[in-house]
Image (cartoon, rainbow, N blue to C red):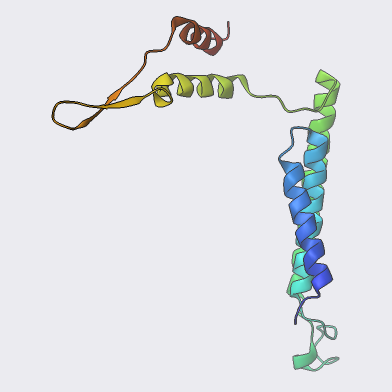
Length: 160
């Protein structure tokens, strides 16, 4: 069976919009993204099935039966999407109740790890100059960082 071009475009738009909304910080938008992805997956699964008669032995010839597997998979996807929707609604409500908004904030530990990684890289990655020594080999010369950036990173990393 060749899927209709309209279905293919609708599935593509649902997936693209769903992924875009999933990347937002607002839990309400993430919820809408999950719902759109679920609907896109359901439509994709339904377009994969072959049209035909009911899959009941004795009422339809075996070659003309439709495949019941896509329908069973869509029912499973609906249940999974419903569970994810309920969970994200509970998270958004709890976040709104505690903080007055549903924005997902950066984790303090993640911020600390990012700052440690930036400090380990050091400023030498952007401020390196290459010089050649007397043998013609290339030697990297790093420029030391000033003390203000190092102390600010260290203080922020400790949570002060």
